[in-house]
Length: 124
Image 1 (spheres, rainbow, N blue to C red):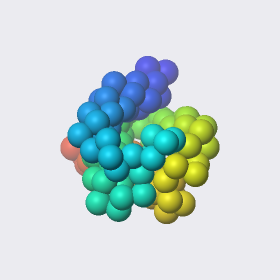
Image 2: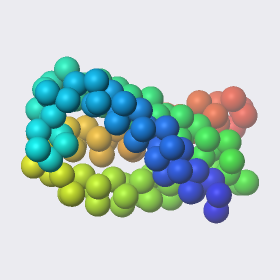
Image 3: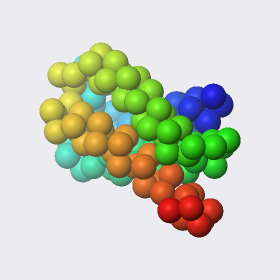
Image 4: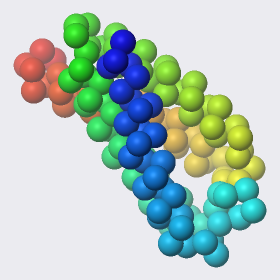
């Protein structure tokens, strides 16, 4: 169970403050809703999110007591549920592509991080 919760906990503890710090460096690029349409800032956001999601996948696979891919799939589902609810709260604050890339990053990033851990175990 802890392996499933590790993804949103790690993301919340690392990525959310990091994004707050980065966005704080560029307050003039933010809109009233706290988002931005500045493409370089959005790309930096996507890159940071992907790296943290990759780490989340690795940690989920590391902590999974067995059936790693089941834990990874459930962690992805949980992150997508949380991600959709958060993205809906500021849907108009950023371009549509940002939301789509974020959802894809959850699936790909967590899976890729878990795959690295599985390869380390020699179980791929």
